[in-house]
Length: 545
Image 1 (tube, rainbow, N blue to C red):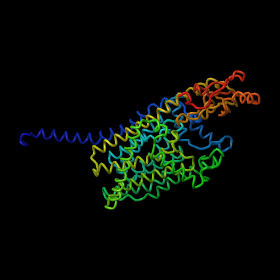
Image 2: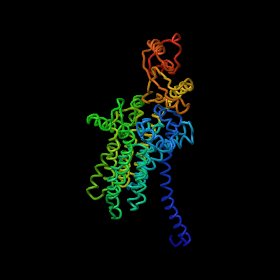
Image 3: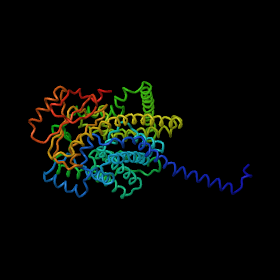
Image 4: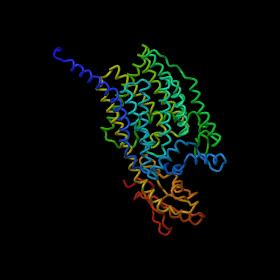
């Protein structure tokens, strides 16, 4: 049969084989990166319609801060003319770029958030590849991070930009660090220090990345020792560069603000060093267990059909049992000289713990739908953890590769389903947000400076999603130049609203305007003259549902 094949046909077959390998080498990774990027972009698309949400209003004045204006503001802070809780110029400058492009169109700001989140998913994929995971393991890590339903809030809220961009910088720094260590190139190491510095200038939590460097070097050393015998040790001298960036930032921040980053509670106590150990540990435990292990809001869980809850529980049990067995295999293979998977597993676990530690000084997350920003950094550790398990299963063929692909597909489907339900709640809440925004703006845009705005019986959340316009007075300053306005949120018994407003108006000396939430209509109304008051029913937003 071979004699029937001409030399030309053999050449053509060789060229075809080389071409197929080239396509697999370059086009395959491109498709994976495209999948990791586009899937979160598509699933989070509804977030572009959410408008301004809660804390977003408080940050609108920062949209106009150019670099020169930031320098000017720093001088004012140092002179004691103004006070800021924290210093995050990286986030301010990115907002300013958004403002120059989109103006006051909130959809553009949301789009940038979604883009940054998808970019972070690619950076997690890239980091996993540099650390030694194969394409399947790295794709698992990138997709898990991009689709993880426990961190909706920093993507959905414009004020979550600090977390998103700070983590972009940290992931870029870690990628550059790995490339510099693998290639032994100081240029990449220097760029990693610069990216890290920008990360901590965007949000202070990024400084925990310094403690990941020895572990990353440990993983790279295990990987290099197994592949080519070239050992990668610990770059202690470059650790000093990252540490210097932290010292400069903390010194500068303390010099300007008088504390290390503005972590204060409602009594103005510095939380960084005044949280007792028991409270701190309980917060860490709640953050780790309740959100990382069960990333579904309780209201969603209670209203889901039984078969959906069964699917979640069943798949969770399969994943848990598989993970335990795989971790046991890590330990076994580590004892036989294969160190890569064990070191990657330890890195993912330590990543979760290290990135959660700064949140222990703050109130615990619990099941709250909108506080996933505290879990945004730790979620990448969980993604690396699951990516390592996927990589090991794929290489060792503990299960067939087709089964592994099916399990990954089901996991991403489960995450996408939970994400969609979370975003559905935010979409429902945004209808109230838009109504409240339009009502307040219609009646307050012509207020004089130093006016007081009273909002009575407005609920702060809808099914766990906080939506009340916190900092609306700052939005008025940003858009209409109204300086010194104050917003007061007041809760009164329905029968007492009439008398309370009459007493307030008769004794209040500054310009004042009042609004009341009418729960039976789920609407915000301008408070009428005292003689026209009617009774109002309780403050629940869902009384009519």
